Length: 258
Image (cartoon, rainbow, N blue to C red):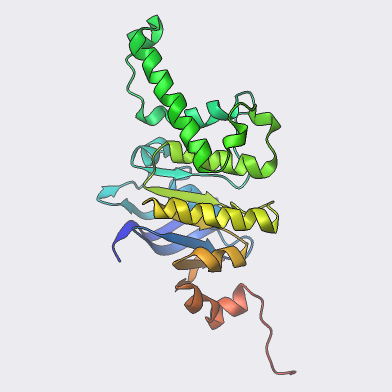
């Protein structure tokens, strides 16, 4: 399968500690894929490097034909890489709609003078942005919150709001950091369906997630990290049956005493 993103020899050090060490990873173009591993495995660090929040200490990051190694996060975004965070990064001084509209700025082509003078062309652009934001909110199941302040939304809705804002940037690759964290089982099932819909619309999705039921149910490939290194990679069944994964991630015990 053709790779959308390719990582070679990726290392990220913090002082003398290597949070990631010599990691090779390929993200296929299309579908849903997951990065898993025990606490402290380096999963969120990996997402931060793959979105330009951290520059790699060593290694190369390719996205399509572009070399994004060492580029800042806005360059990653410009190439079509969007993300959410484990704790939703919401502007609580804005309405829910305004939060989503923030995600549209990468595609707005307003000139400075029309914006300053509030010319009709600017007003039309604002209407288009508003309509697009409404569409993204409805697409993630937030139609009931179109007129709400973001500070009034329940936690599960805030998670979806961040997804809507990321979708507004029109990503080719969407990285989700712990999207099911804090959700009840029913909300997690609804989230799984939303992720399938996003991937079905042509956006490649990579999620970092501890909810193994969700991961196994929607992922086409799974990449396993352990102590900053690649431990395994493959289909859900291959990863689930891998002895190294069972030992390191699932904490299986020896059967000598059985």
